[in-house]
Length: 370
Image 1: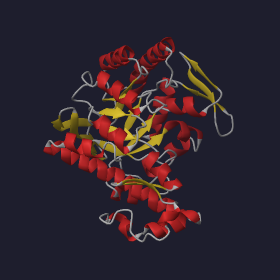
Image 2 (image 1 turned 30 degrees about the vertical axis):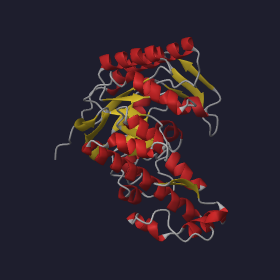
Image 3 (image 1 turned 90 degrees about the vertical axis):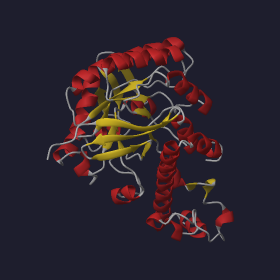
């Protein structure tokens, strides 16, 4: 059977908010979509079977971490990342640029060689060029590949952000060339430029000239306020190509997602639902709650009585409180599943309201609540 080519179909719009379908040979992705993060070839505390039951259509894995452990050769010899981790969902891999910035204390950026850095595990030196990043992602056999970019820390230094944005554009061209022709996979460009409108627009124009399969907005979720993030999206929303998917990297809270969908974003990823699940923070339609709080010791109601999926409504707050206060692993597992399930319920409700033309009302009802 012939493999399906990567494609994006826009289904409906409500102002800038949109629904669509991303077609991959491993299945369709309904947008707006949230991608659970499987950093090291696992969504922490969850099986792929349960991830699928939450309604997740795609997951994200991390190039930086996988190149260090267990190494791309080991995964390639196992038949690729999907077989290695027993996952039949589409997988997006990021380029590793963000982790080079955030994790490595000893790193150097070279225009031609790329990122030269020491592993945060054992100090071993690595070279990650645009070509090497693409080679690694293709070796992992991911379905959506991200270009290599430089993700600078938040700063108001215009010259520094301009230099970084221009470097990312240069690397984008090299990434595109290294990717070659892979119609069953997709290569996404990454818009950089910090909080500066002119730099964001210059970055986007350069990427549009290169013609990528999708366009991501990077360099956010690095310490800016939600208002600043939304302004960046407002600055570029009219220039994003309608017939390509728009991806906001590393974002975020439910209210971040609502505000970004309102500004034309189709794809999201964030460690927040899984990390919060492991530390006792639950996301619910009534807001967030810290299940370790003593007030839940005699609360025998579930987090959400209506949620029958994965039997999540059969576990009381009282019981979850006990699990966390005795450091039982099951607590992290159940709360992580609750949070991912909530995020997917949110995405489903977002899609429904866009289709009905009621997204603005839905947005206004929950933007300050979630």
